[in-house]
Amino acid sequence: MQSIKFAALAVALACGATAALAAGPNDAQIAAIVVTANQVDIDAGKFAEAHASKADVKAFAKLMVTDHTAVNKSATDLAGRLHLTPEDNPTAQSLKKGGEDNIANLKTLSGAAFDKAYVDHEVAYHEAVLSALDGTLVPNASNADLKALMVKVRPAFVAHLEHARHLQAELGKSGG
Amino acid sequence: MADRRRALAACLALAAGLPAAAAAPRASAPGGSAPARSVAIENMQFTPATLQVRRGERIVWSNRDLVPHTVTARDGSFDSHAIAPGATWSFVATQAGALDYACLYHPTMVAHLDVR
Image (cartoon, rainbow over all chains, first blue to last red; front, side, top):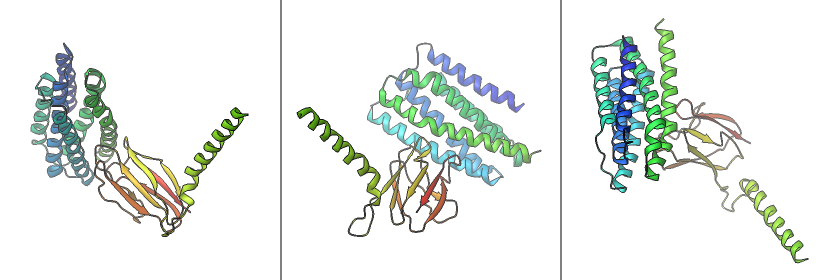
């Protein structure tokens, strides 16, 4: 059941990206997608930091809050310098909806099931965001500074994905 | 002749320039403090991943990423705590030995210090 939800998230992201791509997202839309993507993971991280049971899952959740907050600060600072007002679009909306659905699902869980659901979602989420970065956001950014910001932040997202996959494997072992 | 002299001058400039960079760490300032060595924290990596230093040398880590990092010795002998994006942290290695260090936040970031 969980895997169906994650597949739905990935499809929503991909479809949202495609919808916005009809003409290709402009820089204002890309700025909205970047800020929303970070905010969604900050919200999930805050919730998981308070509700996860394993210490390393809590620590990962805290890291997501710290890192995505730092990235969003850079993104909003840059948007300000570029006089770029983030513009809502289908991709940003699907990201937001996916984040809300994730937290709604997490609210129904506790203990090991909560940890597993949060970490599984983080793996799927970072995979989807990296795919959107590479396939849609970076190629369509016209402002060089905006493009550079996304290129610069990419290694952090890759590290988060590796970290989440490592936790996923650990939880798989302990969950038997 | 002029060409040879120019070529010789170029060689000398090169010879002077290259070892200067390599030898710099060995030179001691009169005050007793050695010049700093640098490690970049960028793209979620420490560069160079292995650094050889002499006792008394200052090592400066510069965080060029957009997220905070730490420089934390495995054996607990030093810990920068959070280094904000754009900030630096430095440490003077006083004891000889091999030290592994990592970023406490990002487990994939590991590096090595060889103090001689």
